Length: 286
Ligand code: C2E
Ligand code: MG
Ligand code: MG
Ligand code: MG
Image 1 (cartoon, protein in one colour):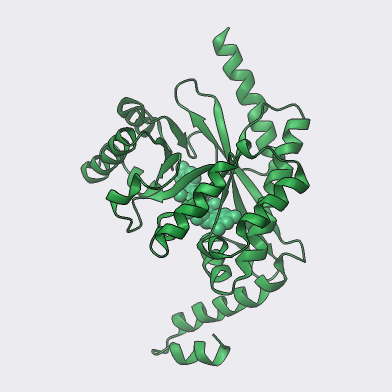
Image 2 (cartoon, helix red, strand yellow):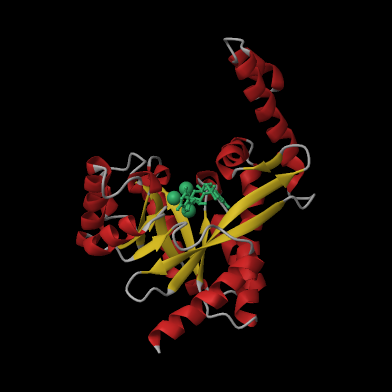
């Protein structure tokens, strides 16, 4: 889309719409240079196994600090990166950086945790995706069983068979796969059992006010039961309080991720968080 087309698409002029458009254009323009100017970085959020309270994985979450725009949230710039295809180079950078960081933590003596990386639909549609992933794994000498890729249901809307084939190729390498934001897409439940995935991540919108909100609680309970009957692991996203946690435990949810345990943190702060977290676990055990 050219700048002119964007203006034409803006049918109803209002200051608010114009502000939004200006911001979108600025993001689009600035994002082209974000990678080479070193404005992108990753934060990391742990995922906890409820059976023993030990961390099992860490999700890499992209951050962008721009001198003109400030800290832009990924929910704002990732859709634009998708449209402009910048997500291809950015996504590759995320994957490589996450693999390198995981190895640094290991060298620093932290227990090995899986690193989980979000993969966008356009990355997935690249013909050379597998080659690119293999290259990054080879370059970094990364053990694929410590890698998890998070995909969304939208992946299955088109080219169902091709998608399944690609996912199987990833699985054959020992890479773990999870279905992110589960429940927000349109995937037909009858297809779910054909997806070669290991884990369902319940979208955090369903966790809102659980267990006091009856609708959300019913959906959350239903998704957990579904995952169990299909032999999938289940992770709840966006767990913020102990009421949610206790409810999830009672339903048999295995893993959680959320502010209750930790917000996404810089690599340095995550290492500090984990060290003190492991120390506490050992103290309570002894
Ligand atoms: P996501 O993959 O579903 O990541 C989880 C989001 O939930 C993160 O938002 C995280 O900060 C937030 N979250 C986790 N626990 C809580 C909680 O207890 N309360 C609340 N209020 N929020 C919580 P974030 O970091 O803003 O990322 C938003 C989305 O942007 C991600 O959702 C993902 O779809 C996308 N994204 C982030 N990094 C990447 C990336 O490297 N590549 C791609 N393709 N997408 C990414
Ligand atoms: Mg995710
Ligand atoms: Mg999610
Ligand atoms: Mg997501």
